[in-house]
Length: 543
Image 1 (spheres, rainbow, N blue to C red):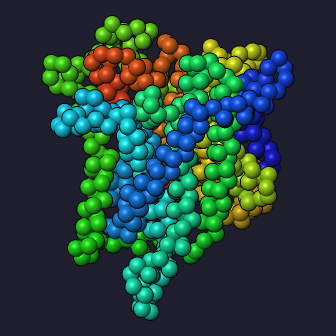
Image 2 (tube, rainbow, N blue to C red):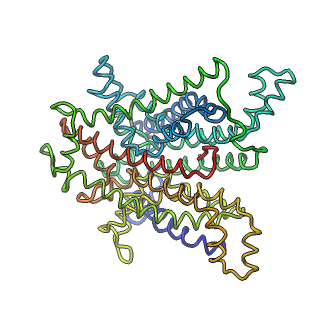
Image 3 (cartoon, rainbow, N blue to C red):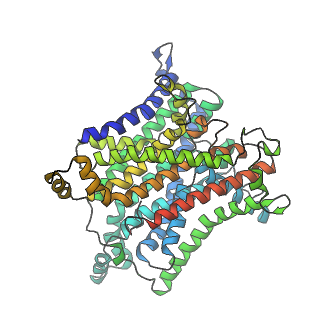
């Protein structure tokens, strides 16, 4: 039965992921029907490509270290402290994670860029600098550390550390010898995920870095869309694929260590109100960090969307209803129609992700050998493999019967679903594994078919997990940009594509419209996340 459940997800990934990626890499590395592997060495020996590889690696390491430094105190506060507004604040710090990278870049552009808040107040501009990129990456990945590390930290029994202190260990020594080893797998898993997301960064670097900085993902886009140099793009895709595969393999090992770790307790038993000046100061520091790092960029984004040439008002929002506002021929339809397009695409993509991801999670429920573990790793690859490659691969492969989809609207939801499936699997799998097999066996003994047993036993127990998975899939589908920028039709742009097009045009009106569209997209994502917080399946706050 497991193989039957795997058939649909395997077919989906084979047709809409492996085939397009393989095809575009093959087209780049083949000449007159023969493989030209010598191109790999030629491309990787070029000084400009070596600079891209070096920048991609060191900025990912720097972003990861800075994120851990800033977010670990927040993980402790959410794990150990109980204070008014905790659930709302947890949702607030998670909003950046589900925001499209285009919106993140736009928010920091409004804060740090030309004419931004810092420029107006002190004449300081940080756009086109590496600091803007690093801060935006911390903003985007803060929740990964807080929820991954804090989720486990909240379930560790604090009495173990207290016992060490009773035996004479100091506060730091007790933490280093008792708590830190228990947290190490979660810290490693969070660090690897942050490194993965920053290593493959696209929208943030493209908007904030300017032409001076380029990651592998940005360079693949430049070589593919602007220079039409498929051989170079193919080599860079292989390099990124190898790097992502290695990162995911290490991440899978750390997750397995965390799953078989320690005796955990109910998070409700480990949190309490802060005690003493030191703990209140720590809570205040975390709240100040959330204010400056998360709320300030989002607040400036909203403020800029209302700050028009004639003063504050809805001018930029009203202009979104006009075709070619400001003399721009960027859009064949009013930019505001991108809202409806994005919602429709995201709903269809969510449905596809739920079906494919749900079947995959069911197939992975019972732990098995290398085949199933390999399939689990395969499901995570779309999070790290170049979305630009996938999008361009769609155009050159899905253009002939029986899959002539190049002019079909379904192409965009299919690309978005590829990113949503991993979130569905990661959300549903732990809950499905927690279902007692004896319940299914009892249903079978009573004559229930496998389908009815699933409907009567599994579905009631995982219903909330399905809703959470749907919420995450909807949010990430709504913000997908790398692949969609290639395949979205000019008369049917999505919100992230519309924002990028507006930012690519000169003029105050285009900039203001980009701020307004970004604000709309941010609000939709934030509402989705707040709904997720209300239906979470546990109190740990873990992803």
